[in-house]
Length: 435
Image (cartoon, rainbow, N blue to C red; front, side, top):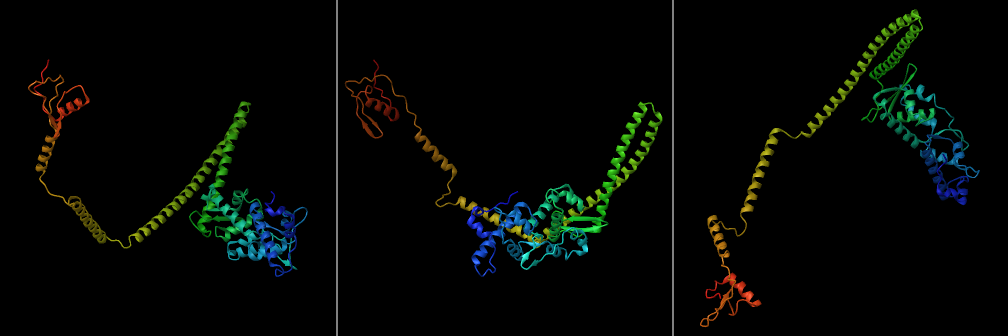
C-alpha cells in the first residue's frame, strides 16, 4: 500500500526544499524551519493512521518516503521534535510508564519480556535508525477496536480469557505479536483490561458493559475460569468417548459380517465400558454446567437488585419534598381553581353586553307572527283573454304601492310583467268574460 502523498509531492522545487536538511538552529530562519517541520510531522502521522502502523522506525520512514531515489535528510530532526511534542513515544518509555503502577499484577512477566527492548538514545544528535517508536494516536484507535470486537463477540459473556483466546479474537485486526502486546498495554493504561500470569497461563479480564473501568481479577473470577476450563475439557472428552462408541459399533458389525464373532463380541464389550465412561462424563458435565448456570443467574439477580436499589434511590430523591398532606392540599387547591374557572366561564358566556332576559313563549309568538306575514297564499291568475265592458274600462292595478297602467293583459312584455305582479300582489279580475 503506497503512502498517500500531499499535492506538493509533485512539485520538484518544493520537494527539493523539504528533502533538504534542517538548519543547525531554528533561529536562522524560523519560517522555513517551521514550514518543513509541520509538513513532515503531519505526513508521518497521516501515513501511520492510513496504514495502521502502531510503531515505526527512522529506517522505515526513509524507505516509505523515498522520492525518485532520494530520501528525506531531515527525518531524524523531525522524530526528535515529534518525541518532544508527544506525537511519538519510545517503545521502552511507553512500556515503563504503563507498567510502573501494575507490577503486582504480573505485568513484567506478561508483557515486558515479549517486547523488544531497544537502546533508546540520541547519540550525537542522531536517532538510531532501528529504534522503535510508538504512535499513540494509532495505538488508542486499535485498542478501542479490540474492545469493540470483544464486546460484540460470543466471548463477551466470559469475564476472564486466556491470552491465546484474545489473540485469536483480534488476529486479523492486529497481525503482529509485538503490536498485540502494545495494544494490551494501552488497554491496561486506559483501565479497560486486567492482566495476570498464573500457573503458566496469561489471563486477560475485560471491562464489562456499562462500566467505565475494569475491576481487579478476584477469586470469583478465577473460580469461574476454572469451571469453564473444566466444562471445556469434559465436553472434549465426552465427544471423544461418543466417537469411540460409534467406531466400536461399526467394527462389531464388520467383524460379525466377516464371521469373526469373537472380535465382534470383544468390540461390544469395549463399547459397554465406553458407554459407562460416557455416562460418568455426562454427569460431571451436567454438574459443572449447572453450577455455571446458577452463577449466571446469581449475577443476573445481582444486577436486577442493583437496578432496584438505584430505582428506589431515584424515587426517594424525586419524592424528597412530597408528602400526603401536601399532596391533598394541592389537590384541593386545584379543585377550587377549576371550580372558579368554570364559574367565570359560565358568567362570561351568559352575560354579554346588551343581553335582555325575555320570556321564551313571547319570543315564539313573535316569530310565528313574522312567518304568517311572509307566507301569503295567492290565487292563480286566469290564463284566458280578458274582455272589457264598454261601460267599464279596464281596472288599474296597484302593485307594491305603484300604479300599473291599464291595458291588454297578454301579448307584450309589459303584459307579462303585469301578469307576474298580479299573481304576487293583486286579487283576481272578476269582470273577465270568456268568449
